[in-house]
Image 1 (spheres, helix red, strand yellow):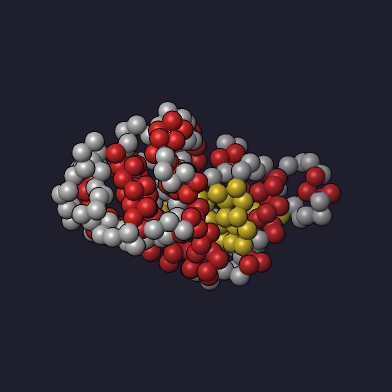
Image 2 (tube, rainbow, N blue to C red):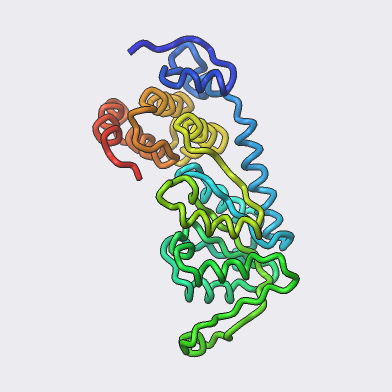
Length: 287
């Protein structure tokens, strides 16, 4: 396979040549990223993440009631929100919940983090969006009314048995991390998310084309040191980005997890990691 030696000086130019590998000895040295990667224009992504940081900082100060961070899977939404929370929030004032959550569990967590300055983060909790009870709880928590009253309307005695009140004033903040809207099968969930967007600030991290996802991966690797823990040189990380570029149309899903999988292969098998990636990633499901 031929390697292009054309220097691409901007993001758009680079994207149009993604099918061609852009790393060889002509660019850079073993201690830094290839010059073409260093020249990529990440200004839009940098602005997107700077805005996320500002909103999370404001959330931690109690300046905003809710923020929705929306984008396709695997672009670093959770990674970034968690990093900013660690930077700006006190450890005992926030909680990140990922996975399945029932409306009752949501009510319990909202009560626990009801005080001013508290932050409850729901990370891709589609189960909450799928039930009207969960949506109504979030609507109340994220509302713009002067007083946000949250009530448990069920006649069940479960709440009382747990020692919780049937209602309370919520003064905390909510952060929703969601990929809803990037999967056509989730149209009903999109309606629910739109209802919450009306009550909240909504930040869109990235779109879902392969080119945009690839640039997102490059940004997180080059600017945010995503692969730092693997102790790879800039040259090695450039090779990983090259591999993704060359196989852009053959990889099922372009994501940060893909870059980390490739880094682990390179670390464990420095001589034949490409062959192993061909067999283990190109024909597999990365979801």
